[in-house]
Length: 124
Image (cartoon, rainbow, N blue to C red):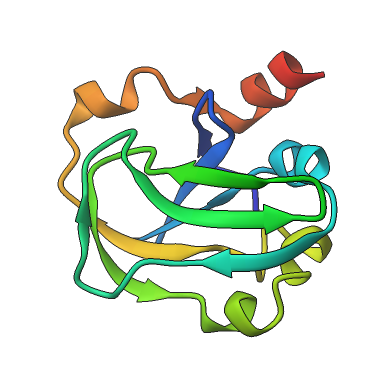
């Protein structure tokens, strides 16, 4: 699922598929967190600016704020990971997306995002 994926320096990804923008955590972020035990997501309809905290993920190690890679409005949350947060450890780039957004971002907001392959090289 990584083709066309863009990643932020704070380890979130955005992926556009069929007009829908998925936001999630990269594999690297999930590895750094360890076993995830709790996920708190925003309400549908909430609007966030780029780099604004929109969610919290708690692992056995720590709680981490998750930041919006581009501006947008939440159109759907992934209910599955609220009831089964371990899905983030199992499939962060697939079934464990966090939210879907309708984005209001312009090209400028995308400038500091890395192509997935470039991101992978940077975090190795």
